Length: 192
Image (cartoon, rainbow, N blue to C red; front, side, top):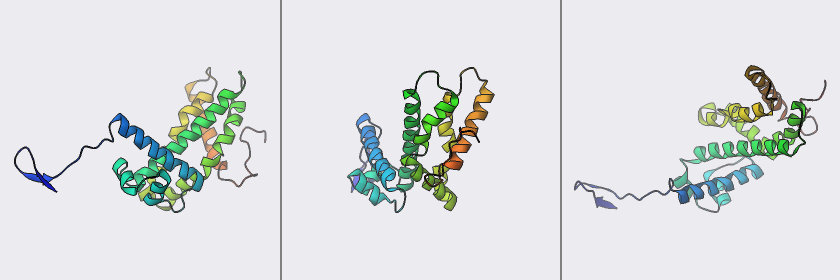
């Protein structure tokens, strides 16, 4: 459909996108939550825009209205899964008794670290290694997303450098053990 523009030239008809409005953002978050739930349940195998649309209860065209393609949707869903993982881990720490040691706090987070999301997040890292040009965003910033929460587990009286070193060690040990088969995961805070 062609229309006249204010300067008299003809151009394609445009429509006002609502994605930036509060209502549009709420709809976008709702769709992203549904797709994220599907990924958490079914993993990344055979992920597609059409599968995501079925999970969200909409069409792939609606998803394209709110997201810049399947890769953008996947990137955002993986970020959402990591956020859920962090929220679950920090909730477990808050539910513990006052005066917990760092080891107690790490042990409290461990079930969330190796929980249901870990399978999908491991698959995302696998995609990053399989096709780094296409899936680099799935791995970028993963540890940086977790770092503030892990730093918050450290005792307040520690120096910033010590907190950072210990937080990086905790992240490294959780990354090294989260993909192990059930029953073989060693608690990184347990004595050797």
